[in-house]
Amino acid sequence: MQYEIVSLRERPDLAQSAAAWFHEKWQVPLADYMQSIEACLANHAPVPQWYLALEGARIIAGIGIIENDFHNRKDLSPNLCALYTEPDRRGRGIGGRLLSRAWADLQAGGICRAYLVTELTSFYERYGWAFHCMVQDTESSQALRLYTYPAE
Image (cartoon, rainbow, N blue to C red; front, side, top):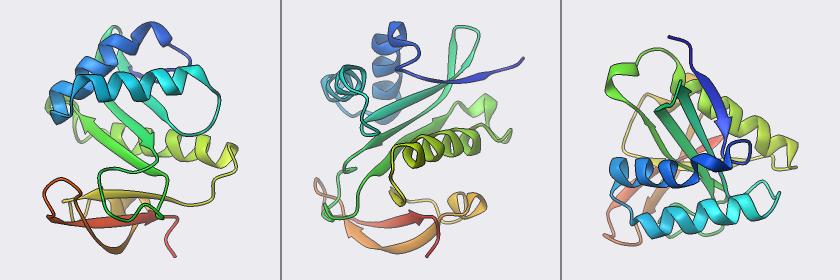
């Protein structure tokens, strides 16, 4: 089945469903997602922003752009966050398309560098991201890998 990538600004009717979906995947409080999504819908700044991959009415993947993704380096902003693809839809390039769409919109908004934190060690490199430094998670103090795009 074909899927489409949409910004929540294009589909504000999906705001509640998107917040619930991201909350289910990442266990970040639903209210936090709703607050960020509402901020996204209320203005036209490049940050925050939220995207979904849809197969009909089913959310099969999503990604966000926020100022900081729970790490101690507030100067490394904006951050792509919450990238998730449903297990039965992985391996089809959907995550890569979401990364590309988010990056294109950041560039259109005048932003020339983006960051993300991850525990993965090879996924993002396939899409041109490069390891930048280690950062500390603000909630657990765990060390996290921070990547940058474009690679320096």
